[in-house]
Length: 101
Image 1 (spheres, rainbow, N blue to C red):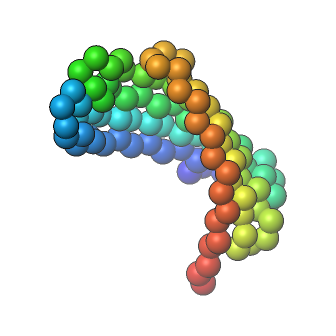
Image 2 (cartoon, helix red, strand yellow):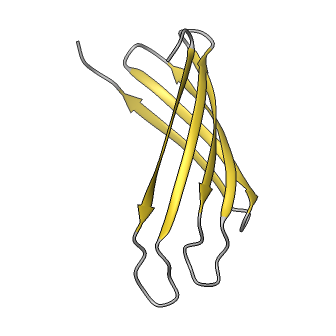
């Protein structure tokens, strides 16, 4: 994190047992910017290898926002799709409650 900017990423390995399935890898990297105490915007790039014998690798993106209703109550939004691969669409709306000192 530096100033209003935050970036991070990660990956993993998914064990996918069963006929016709393959174990697969996934990676992602995210960048977000706090525009104000109320709003943070961000975007991420995602890559995953095929999860079935006849499946395809996919590369995609998500864009999203965090709306800070109060210091402890937040609404999260995200939407994205594959750029290459099976052209999956994903969307997310969530509520987050934070607490602490």
